[in-house]
Length: 125
Image (cartoon, rainbow, N blue to C red; front, side):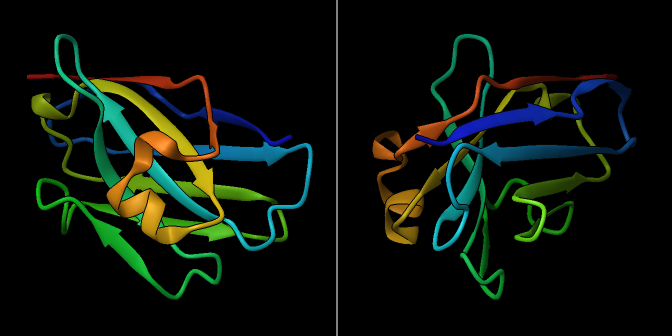
């Protein structure tokens, strides 16, 4: 069993930055793709970014390309997301997830093996 714990959320003004972290524990991080997702009030959960196990491949939603950057430190069992130039529409609860399949993370993330509890990001205008 893997436990994922997100941190780093908070309140920031538009144009500001935050760095989210997701620490994994409970079993090996090895071989698992990781992703970030978000859910705004009244909306469905949506894909934000994903990263392969090696970190060589990254993927982003169009809405965050050029502003967000996903990375991972496998020695620390942690995945990060640097969020720059934040906009009010980025306000949401951000969740990290992991799955043995990168394809699942990209195309069927609702089926991902493990999810964190989420961290709130609020961007004021």
